[in-house]
Length: 217
Image (tube, rainbow, N blue to C red):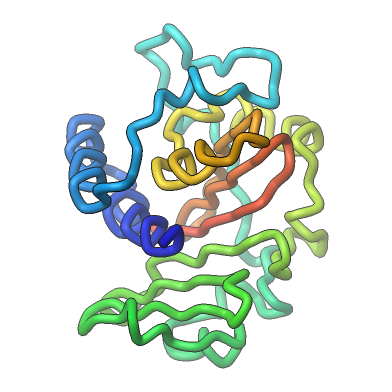
């Protein structure tokens, strides 16, 4: 069920990253209508941030969040030993050892997953829309496993992204982790690349998910 909610979120939000705030609110309402059991959570009341300082967007209306987010070059990014920017809709199943999920696949959208679901890829109209990776996936930046990043090392390396964390919480993940009492802190950060965005989910200070979404800048 969580994977389905995540995919709904990816299709309706992440694949349309340049929407206005009003449009995003409308899409969020649509998500809630589609997922009747997706609870509406007051994010800031339920969860703390692992960072003790407040994000710089709090109480500021004139801030352009995009100006603060760092970019990474996908030529230094690899997934399961493959060059990230060389993975495409035709070779993704073979290169990442994925299988199509017939239950979630339609005429225009194909869902590919690894057996342990550490990688979930979405192909829409012949193009990669998103690649969602979990902590056991082999995702590396400059030869180092991204999932070995600590919250502090991320803050030091990507200070701009850190400063604007939690500006757009992942609705599906907020709902999912709200049901787990042991989750005290929840943070969402973002990086840019030439072809899209990398969205990070941190639980109790640990990186547990990185989702790439394609963006036509």
